[in-house]
Image (cartoon, rainbow, N blue to C red; front, side, top):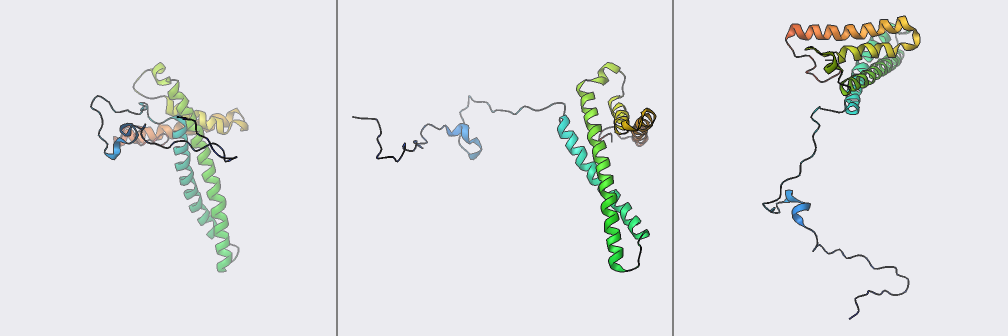
Length: 196
């Protein structure tokens, strides 16, 4: 008996066998109700004990900050557009409001989004280097340091004095947040968004 398959002309090789006799259904779809053997243990996915990664945190912070920046900038643009309308006609007012909302909203959103990316990267690398372990104490030095470096990096091209002032503004923002949370009895960093 010849087990070699032959085919006619130039029709190409025959299709492979799609027989399901070699498939173990207990490994393919245990959720479909196929009974499992008792000696097998379930497979678990690895879980990151430290929380979200640097890139995931960066994208989450950037997206939320961008939306808040656009909203705040658009509200400011609405006020500016209504106050600086060159005419009392409806179409001119509408055009002025839309122009100011778009201009101020995009500026504020981009500014806050970029600051969130820089802050998240500094905070992620500070956590990765475990700076808190080397400093000691009961407080975290990474958020204030990240905020200072974010402000200094953002205004680095304007000279060292302006960069230090911007870094101090970022440091004071974290300090005010920490003080407010302490007065309210909320654990610092419990919100999971930037330094809140």
